[in-house]
Image 1 (tube, protein in one colour):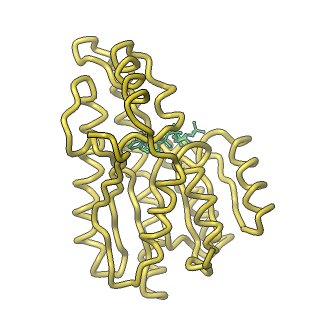
Image 2 (tube, helix red, strand yellow):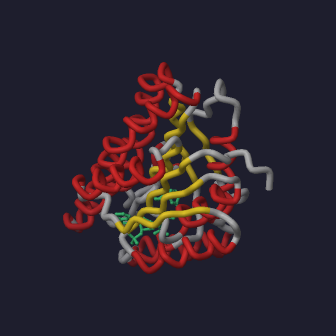
Length: 252
Ligand code: NDP
């Protein structure tokens, strides 16, 4: 691969599986030094070992992004050890669909805590580094993982979809705010990608819907999304893809 990201420092949240894991590997392959964040330390250590075996550089930080102080401590370490991040892939998220009448309030809260509050904790801790890097090098990237659920209506996905609408709308505002400082902001909106995301679903109706979808089409792979993250970050500094929708070809 052409090392379009050499010299860059990328922080990837939700890097212990799925989209984040594949993206960390891909960005490392493009030459970035990557910092991988998630809660499962062992998975992160395996990922770092794999990246290093392939000639890349990586640092694992086992962090719960819903813990603002822990995220700030992680950002301080990235500043001290790597001189700060210039690419943030803000990707950790959870999807727990259920009919609203079931009042699965603990699941509502988990989605809001991670997809909104966790995402904000990471933005708060790393934006100063992005702004500094953009000032010095002319460009930095903030890529937030939203979903097609931000735009489309899916019964039983109300809370998840609303958290993702938050992510997309927030990203557009931050783009307007930070673009003046050469920080590009993008919202990624994938359709269905085969990852651990589906394994946390407990609602029978949603599980049936997912199974039907799996039979009807070939789902995207985490690597498909990773390619897009690498592409966004490799564009000339004047180019900012604001919102990117990535669908399985056969997903309606
Ligand atoms: P996975 O479940 O495979 O990955 C989720 C990641 O988030 C894991 O690495 C998990 O690691 C991490 N995570 C969960 N809770 C926390 C926490 N409190 N603190 C830090 N990290 C946490 O799913 P995907 O890769 O599919 O999901 C990535 C993003 O993509 C999510 O935002 C999801 O909403 C979005 N998305 C996914 C789609 C899909 O069809 N798969 C479609 C559209 C969007 P750990 O448990 O170790 O902390």
